[in-house]
Length: 115
Length: 109
Image (cartoon, rainbow over all chains, first blue to last red; front, side):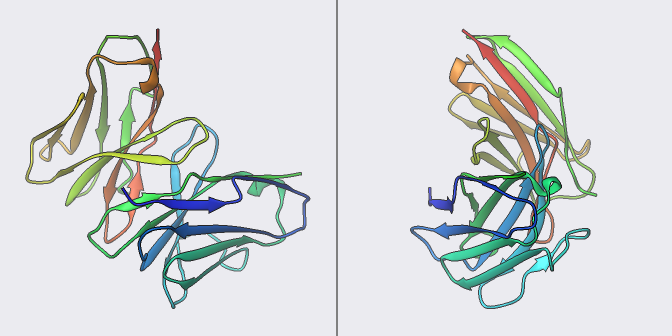
C-alpha cells in the first residue's frame, strides 16, 4: 500500500512551547489528510480534516487556534500544537487519502509529551 | 454518534486458537473496515466489507457484516503471537472514518 510518514516520531516539550508535526504522503498525492488524537488505551478521535489549499475542517470541541493545520501541498500537512500543555500529551496520527472513495493510509504516529 | 463499539474490550488466547471480536455501530453505513494497531504504532488496514456483502475472507481473517443488526465480527484463525495488537472497526460517515473503542488481543506462545 501507499506510505505515509510522520515526523518526528516522538517529541518532549515544555509547557507553553509550540510543536510542529509533519505528515507526508511519500508515493502518492493526497488531496485530503486527516489528523487524529489517541489517548492511552483509547480509540482514535478525529481532530480535523484538511484539503490541500483550503482551510481545515475541525471536529466539534477541537480548538482551531490551538491546533493549527496547514495542508500547503499535495504531499505535506502539518499540525502545530500551540502553547502546549500537559493535557495535550497524546499520540497524534495522520492519515492521507488520494481522493474521496479511496482508502486512507495512516502514518506511524507521533507521541507528544508535554512536561 | 456513529462510533462503533467493540467487544470484548480485551481478549487473551493461546497461539493456535481462534479470536473473535465484535463491533456494533449505530447508523447506516456504506462499508465497514477493520484495522490493527500494534502498541504505540500507526494503524494497518486489514479488510473492508461493503454494506451489500455479508462475509469476506483475507488469509486468516474472516469478517462478517449484519446490517440488520448493525454489527460486524472479525475472526482471526490459528492465531500467532504476532497477532497481538489492538483491533478497531471503523465506519465511514460523509467522508471521514469513525473508530470504535477497540479490542486488545493478546496471543500467548
